Image (cartoon, rainbow, N blue to C red; front, side, top):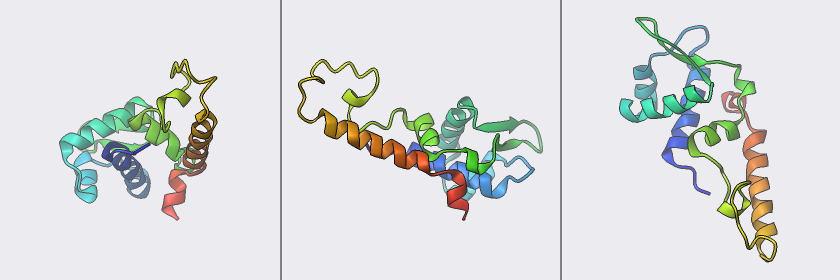
Length: 132
């Protein structure tokens, strides 16, 4: 499993919003400037986070983005899954991985265990952990 820039930037955007939004919406250009991310790439990332229901949006002069929940309510794993998809180390441990060799595979339990460790870890961290 390798987290792409999309996943890393999504986490940074969510942390940025947690640190800076408070009551106000934050313009995308402000996030792009602080995070050093191009507006075009940031728009793709924010679209995924918005689709997942993690952001509120507002248009106009005071428009922008802010979190829909408190930072402690966002699991890092959920943010990464919204942008990366499944975090499984190999496809056969994905629920619909359709591996016909799973039953006879000598290594399947290893991969299944690694998948559990990865998911347990990313789900044990929240945005609030990065704000401390």
